[in-house]
Amino acid sequence: MLVKEWAEREHLHPQTVWKWCRTGKMPVPVEHTPSGMWLVHDPKYETPAPPDTKQSRTVCYARVSSADQKADLQRQADRLKAFAFNMGVERPEIVTEVGSGVNGRRRELNRLLADPTVGTIVVERRDRLARMNAGLIESALKAQGRRLIVVDDTELDDDLVRDMTEVLTSFCARLYGRRAAGDKAKAALKAVEDA
View (spheres, rainbow, N blue to C red):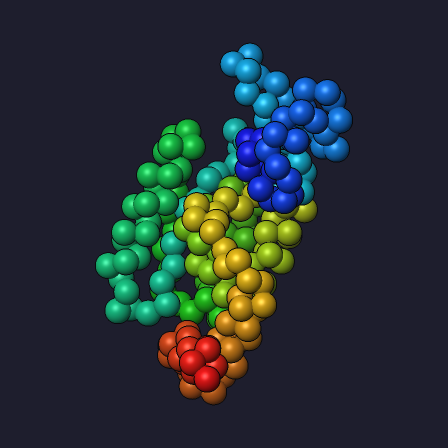
């Protein structure tokens, strides 16, 4: 990871971090490349590569919530495939699924998670993997020496808002059915904000 990116995540000034790199005072391993760039190798933010990359497969997982969004499913799959090619993957596999992110019984996702030959799973956003507890899935993959790559990893700045949205989505899914849960949760949050 670049020094500037690591500094932002750790809430430090980039100049301070560059100074630490040059003086050897960095709390995490760093690498000085031949081109003069400093790379920070913080295990907290890096996902280790699978042990045997020749045997492992890279799979792009695309999901939409309803059959009405099938056109978006194809666009999502195309974006993931292009991202995988840019990563240097020669033959990325594409797995698509139509189903709610709240539903834990998604056949294709469960197949990917159970298959030890899948070394890397690429998703567009965390909520495409799971609406809730995507972090648990990522931790389980990391413990197996596998990795999850999120293409658009921009998250809400406010963790409380994200947590409330997840909880409301879960409750709405139980009350109103899984399909309309996301819309009901957003409407509830908007009503609270307007009040």
